[in-house]
Amino acid sequence: MPDKAKTTSFCCPTCGQAVELTTVSPIGLRITMLRTAKGLGVRELASQVGCSHAAISFAETGRHELSLSLAKGIARVLGVTLDELAGGVL
Image (tube, rainbow, N blue to C red; front, side, top):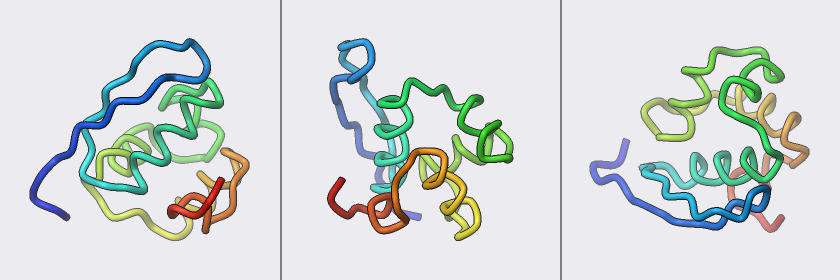
């Protein structure tokens, strides 16, 4: 896991408010942005993926490595390919 956390700001497409995220994982930031764009909370995404909300939170913050099976579930629920989730063009 990288040593330094990065704070990123973006405009939530659902509500238009500025959102600040602290993450150490580029894929985690992508998951957060896609999740909020769909209007899903961490618990809602976890429920649809079939995992714990902690697993989603850890994936978004980079506290744990993202397993392939979890990445596939997240991508499926968010309506993107694994390539797009990993940083490809949306």
